[in-house]
Length: 173
Image (cartoon, rainbow, N blue to C red; front, side, top):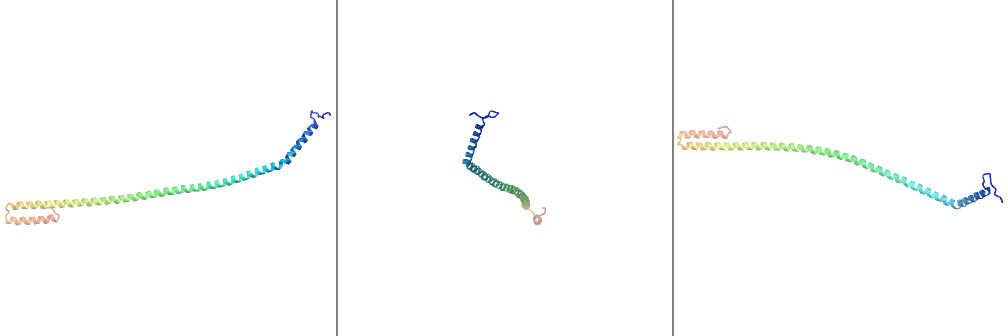
């Protein structure tokens, strides 16, 4: 039999047979694998949707945790600022207290120094009075030893008593 060819040199019956064979093969493949392919793509779609849903939930949780941490961080910043301000206020109060205590202590020391100086002045006056009395006594004894007359003795006793009274009253001799 002679092969039928068209004007391009193609064998038309062979081409038809091959087309029918390919169509039958595609139909058989579709018949036996269509359900499996459909199930495969459905499961892949379900897996994808499940993974996408879990990823979206994880993203929401992560965003919530991020927001919570950001809020905590902001609170810590505010607490830090408040703590710094409290510490500065306490330091200022402590400084004022220390300055006031130092001023009070310096006044007390000054008063004690003035009292001590006054006490030393009084002690020096007492020592000078005692020395004056001792000298007056020594002078009187010396004059008495020179054979003072009775009249001189009476006059010296009067002067002595007058000098002692005058010294005891705080006046100069």
